Image (cartoon, rainbow, N blue to C red; front, side):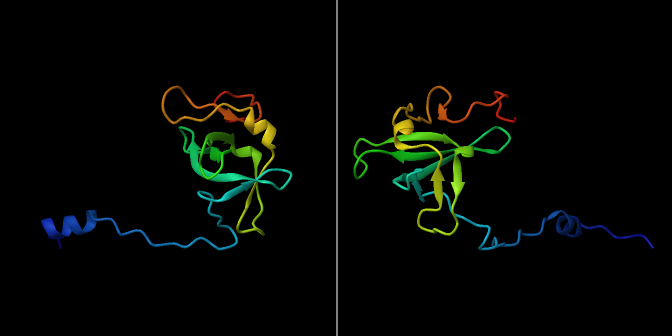
Length: 131
């Protein structure tokens, strides 16, 4: 027997199912944006204000708001993702930088306009950051 096709049956087959709302496991999920960042001497540096991805959607850097008091004369600094360690036992300040305040102060300010951003980080063998 031949299947009878209608516009309604074609539309029903073409309509994708809505995505499920998934909740990540609590032990594996750490919110990064807006979180405080500590330096290696456990000093609070500031907060994460942005994340930078490469063209392959891999996380490359975190942008922190650094310096100043109450946002006055603060500047944004992009820091290589590999210089960040997670401390999930401290939910208030779960991120620790491998750089101290002196190294961060010597860094150029990050800008999301103009030439490609400069970020503080370890030298890589591949300019694309793949290895």
